[in-house]
Image (tube, rainbow, N blue to C red; front, side):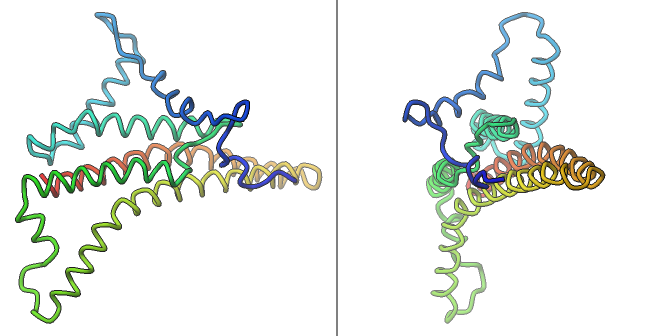
Length: 226
């Protein structure tokens, strides 16, 4: 196969113009707002899943943290639907772009830090210096805690990017191997195809799990600052 391994990660264009914004806006069509008194099964299932996730994620939060419910649910629905749509053939997954994931992680992380310094100033500053620290280690620990604080949004973005990208690359490699083995050994090609199907099912789970993990970590950062 002469196709570039990373061609599926390049930003798609139409008439020389990037269409990433249209791709990012597309998942919102999949979640229509119910306008009937009695919803159908799909909308009812959607509402039940949202309520279940909201209840599970916001149990540990105070009243101030629970005001972020709409933001957190919108975030998990957007990332999950974007990851799932990226598994379709000849599609583009925006969450494989580190720049986009940083664009989501940094503002959310910064908002939680600002909320913490605004409402829990002493507790937020206390994180930089654990209680009982020996005097000679104070400067070093302050530097380490500061670095660990600023690494949080980078870790969020890199985790999501690496997991989604690795899954897509593995599916691409196994799919190419199965296609090449069709001309050499049909039985081995069939086994490879079965592995590809199982991997695809696993990637569906990973797409939803990574959306949940990203949102859960933002929720935990918020819990530490409210």
